[in-house]
Amino acid sequence: MTPLGRYVVDTLVTLLAVAALAVVVLYFARRAGVGRPSGPLALAGRLPLDARRAIYLVRVADVIYVVGASEAGLSKLGELPRGALDSLGPDALEKEPSPGFREILERLRRGGNADRGGGTGNAP
Image 1 (cartoon, rainbow, N blue to C red):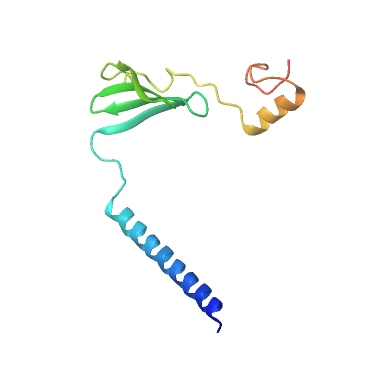
Image 2: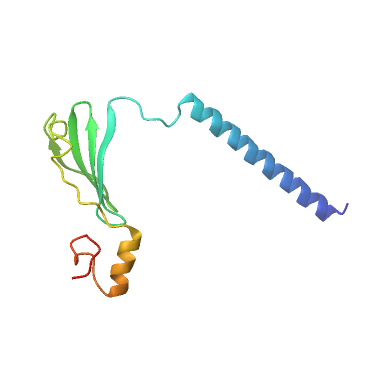
């Protein structure tokens, strides 16, 4: 075998060994619970505003914080009283189902925008 061929084979074997070691370490780390949420911190809700901005509801023990995320970082926007989300029943927040990808493409093809048609997919 030429020296170049031996170098390529050695490099590939080393790369495969490192990749296998990484898979084994990640597998056992996941089984050990590394990276899992723990403690009294939980994400209660998320509202994406655009690609880089979002509003989060973060529950810390009994308090819910409203946090804004943007390119500049995270900032506290407000705080909800204890039990504010628990007092809302499932019917209290009537969510209009967001249109699917197909409906959005059909509206764009017809020359409409997202506000026309009232979310039903029908052109006026």
